[in-house]
Image (cartoon, rainbow, N blue to C red; front, top):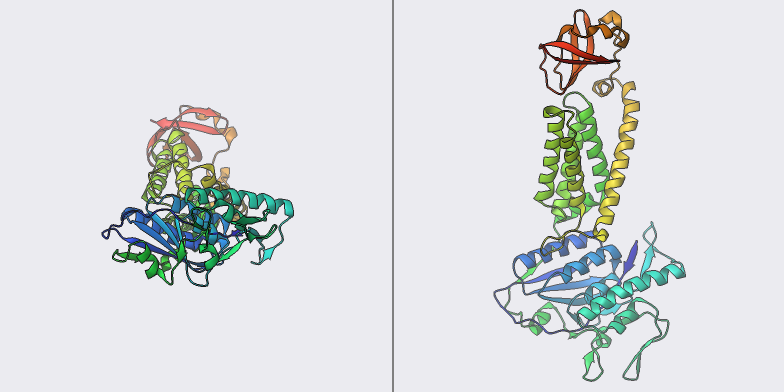
Amino acid sequence: MIWLALGAVVPAATPVDSNRPVYIIPIRDDIEESIVYVVRRGIKEAVDKNAQAVILDMNTNGGRGDAMEVIMELLENFKGDTITFVNKKAYSAGAFIAVATKHIYMAPSSVIGAAAPIMMSPSGGAEDVPSTMRKKISSAYAARIRAAAQRNGHNSAVVDSMVKETDGLTLDGKEIIKKGDILTLTDSEASALYGKPPKPLLAEGIAKDLSEVLGKFGYTEAQTRRVEPTGVERIARLITWISPVLLLIGLAGIYLEFKTPGITIFGFIGATALAIFFFGHYIAGLSGNEEILLFVVGLILIGIELLVLPGHVLPGFLGVVAILVSLLWAMVDKLPGPPSLPGMPQLQLPLAKLAGAMVGAAVVTALLARWLPKTKGPLGGLILQTQLANAAGYATAGDRASLVGQKGVSVSMLRPSGTARFGEQIMDVITEGDFVPAGQEIVVQEVHGAQVIVRKA
């Protein structure tokens, strides 16, 4: 798990419209998925309400690199003003996110920087990264932050010094950072002026609180809306975290439901797991009604294959594809703006989760197939254990060649396979595709080894 951070500088503000709201989004904890949910919802609402600005109220030690990149992309898709107010500290990933906004203001005694990536151990602490890997990771993130800095008018050399050890940085004859050190700036250092014409090093200025920041942009009279995390979003965070397990249970449950006669507990468990999966991703802002509708269409197509057009293959194949696509699509992050096809970076994690769930479901069903025959009660009915002996009226394959042309009666519904009675013999038969209800008179058309093909008489 990679953790990081960063900072920013100053472009021109857009004309103020008091009828358009300003959204304030707090980033006041470690940056991970729960923060992403809040930022995503805030940006989507800001786009929907035609907000003129989004302000990040930031106080963070940093966090996960993947979550940071999603937030940076969300900010890039918002076309109004984007402002970071460093309300104490913006370390690591927080500094990256700040540079992804067009303006940065800092509270008195606040700090920004120390954005060099570190690796987190499973126990939660930092661990050493090999020198080669550290340089590779630092180079990649440095390029990402330089691109954001250049797009938003920040000094790319300053932000580069926050990410990696450089040859040092000197401006106007003053040494900003020594060679081999990582840059961290106080409020006064970040807002100090350098160059000709003079320009702030990183932050446009110092503001004692958010009200003062609003005033600097003329948003004092604008309606402000503060986006706070909801309890449901915290639940959604947990659901998306365990989504591979929910997919495994859901896929295995649906498969076992189709393999078990009647309605069983497997179908209920599978449907419940998938319902929780879609609920969590819907709340998290990852999926919408389209994915759920596609999943239902997939189930309908599989039902058509099993019940209406058995043996036609195409409906079942399309149904399986629709279900897999809906599950994958529900896990893909959707950014504000016009719909677009996701790229491989967006698909990698969902693909890994889906593939893992499919492999896990296959293993679970294989284990259940071995275990269930040994169990008693309703679960033992998954596997056929009754012996079809001649003494019970059943016929073996060797007895069947003489059946061609013989008439009998379907004992169960043939869809297209089932059981039929010929005199005192009961055997498995199959139709050429037509459904035949129970109690229907039938005639044997062909026999191929153990397979008896019948049609309505």
